[in-house]
Image (cartoon, rainbow, N blue to C red; front, side, top):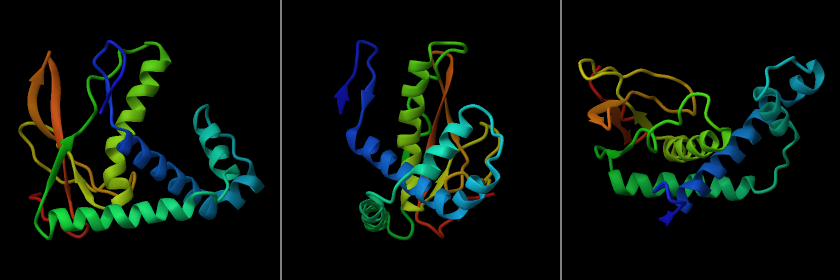
Length: 177
């Protein structure tokens, strides 16, 4: 772990690399599935989305093979680690959210760290379970990055909710509904 600035922020380079691999694969898949339509129709998309869509459409296939190798190796490593019934617990988010209407730089840093955590399930294809509330435990299938999401709250820290995500082998969606 490398320590960032005086805000006690930590970055894990391997998770940042995994997040980068996930973005490369997502752009590649998006381009292959929707690139021709985007180039032909030129849809009027909102700010932020439009930039990401065009970035994906203009992306090259460079590093896609390496990212597929990372995906295969990560899935094999997690399969070996967790077996058929193991569960990996990770933080749901990397820390407290940035304040509303704050400088965009902390928001981008927060989102980068959040995507790093999401990339574990997103790249491996594992089921990620997050929790919705203290009184209700529900598994919800949400196709965001090809994994299921529900969150398990643990309580409060500095008056902010703290939760964990559980990752299980693909096909092991045996969590109670």
